Length: 213
Ligand SMILES: [Zn+2]
Ligand SMILES: [Zn+2]
Image 1: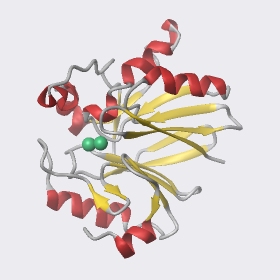
Image 2: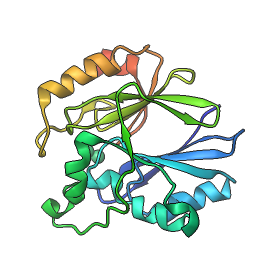
Image 3: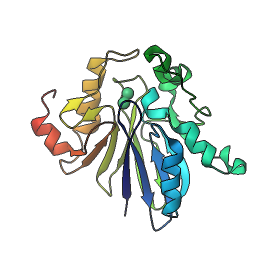
Image 4: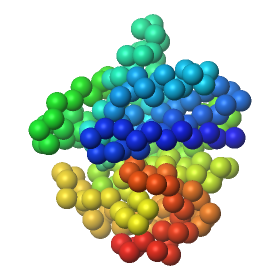
């Protein structure tokens, strides 16, 4: 069983997801947007051990809480906490996710030490997730798909009734549409989609009603 806890955090109301396999008492945080300590405290309250940080992409509103999460990890274990990001988003990460462009200061935390690749398998307790490369919103955007639970964490690729913006550095509208076609709409209609902003949706609902597709 996959448990999903959604937090809406930071200046752009970004969704952060604490996902867990409660039977293994293990948790991963997807896109700690802001206030990382709050996310870790919730995990601790549930008795879950933080095993990794998975980043869909490096925009500041998705990485702003990484430093706060890492600060809550006991010093001896901090260095071994995997922080995953795709190589193609490292440049955005080095530019602090674009925060200075929006007149903001940001501590991006430790450099990602796990480089995601398309098709890579990630584990959370007994659950398996597949990394799906979906460039367009950023050059190195990835999504996380769990087939046994029929759940997709889509970051800023697809929203309920919307798609990711492509006017920021590295954005490409054609690539985004191609990613949605091949990496999202290829999934079963019943797949639940948890995106980077806004409420959850399903592949079927977006296939039918999303005005951008
Ligand atoms: Zn973004
Ligand atoms: Zn975002």
